[in-house]
Image 1 (cartoon, rainbow, N blue to C red):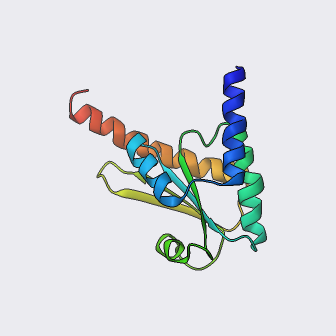
Image 2: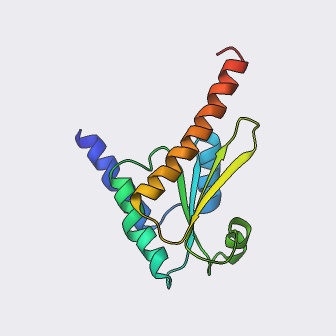
Length: 143
């Protein structure tokens, strides 16, 4: 139990201090067959700060982020990556990618600040898409 608590505390510290960059999180998502959760925001944006410093860390403390790979993209410092990821120009954008049965990336997002419940629901839908794809692949190859 103490080990789990230490992992959750460490995960929370990493999330709030310096989340992994987008490329590293994408590699992790593909390697571990997990959804990729990306927060695109900026330090000057109040809604972005709420998502980055309150909502996502609260979910991390409860273990709700352990089934996804997470990255934060600063729309100012990483403008090219942000433009590639974003739909529209409003921030924050919380985007989740998961592999669908057909092998393509399924994308869903929340634009603007969201509640813990909304984010958790977004993650749950992505996990369901990913799980369906993995289950279908396994049954197709006889595992």
